[in-house]
Length: 247
Image 1 (cartoon, rainbow, N blue to C red):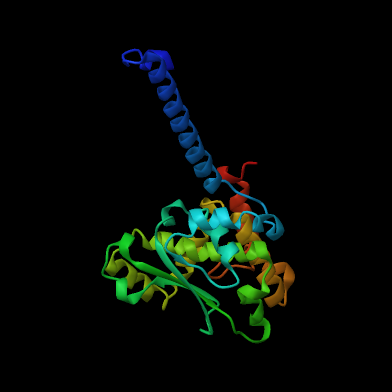
Image 2: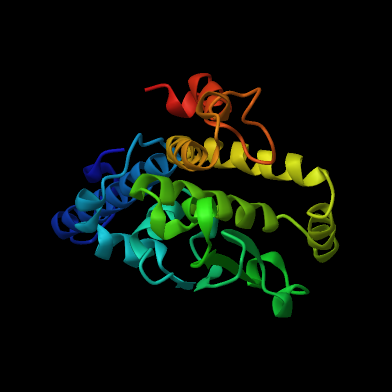
């Protein structure tokens, strides 16, 4: 519909047309911006370059940092991972860096478990002290793109918890004590790939397995690199057939 048609009934038709056109253009710009951003969060980026992304930090913080207590030293990586999860835009998440003996973990805070999903407080806990070959699992020892990948894995857990009741979360906690943990973690990797972070997770899996496995070849294959987390070969197989990665 043309501006002059919309403003035909304005007492001051000239002013009315100008104002109407202005607001239509503003609405079009805002709608187009939202659409572009939505597309970007669902798209896959092969590699995030730290030097390039530093210039975007203020914009990323303003858009994706709401209700987030970011981890010191990993703020940019976390914001880039959050960028892929529009459901978490206003979700309260505390990122904690501490000596906890588990490389990374994600869960709702116990004090908020009985709240509705959107009102819970979620935690992503990052270990800062491991020894031996397990040092490769520490976030601080990994490449920038790989760091985004494993943070994205933990956020994929958080997205999952948004649809879980109190009893569902308790059931998931019990699952971690049995073999069903394998399927739970693999489903999380698949969720991450669907959200466009497959390349980052591929780089993470490649980095960690190349430093921990004594048999480098088997570490990269689906057959020899299985377990609770997908091997690089398994991730690549999904990426190759996924619409998000068609480019």
